[in-house]
Length: 99
Image 1: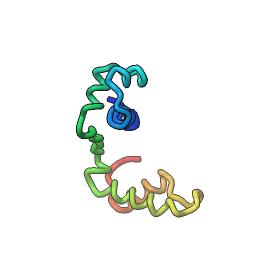
Image 2: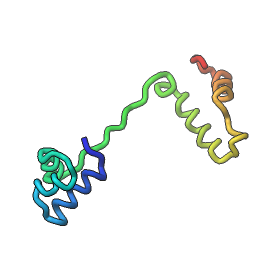
Image 3: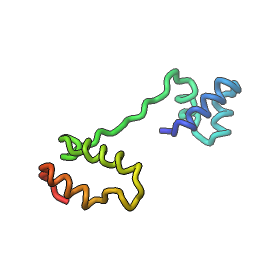
């Protein structure tokens, strides 16, 4: 599968500049089958976002850590939580996982 900028470039060459499939194939270096697939397609392919799994995301812990990291982003680097501090604070809240 091609990246979105490449797909958009192929669509632009086909729709705006009215080039043939063979000319687009020569310019881009992709096979004519690939060029035809993306040039004549009406809708763009959707990106698949993988779902995160594990104890951190299936329970409340992932959201807590994400919130902490967002809060710490505004602080100086020296004042931010590190991995050990995050683990210790999670343990205080009842986290059953390991470091």
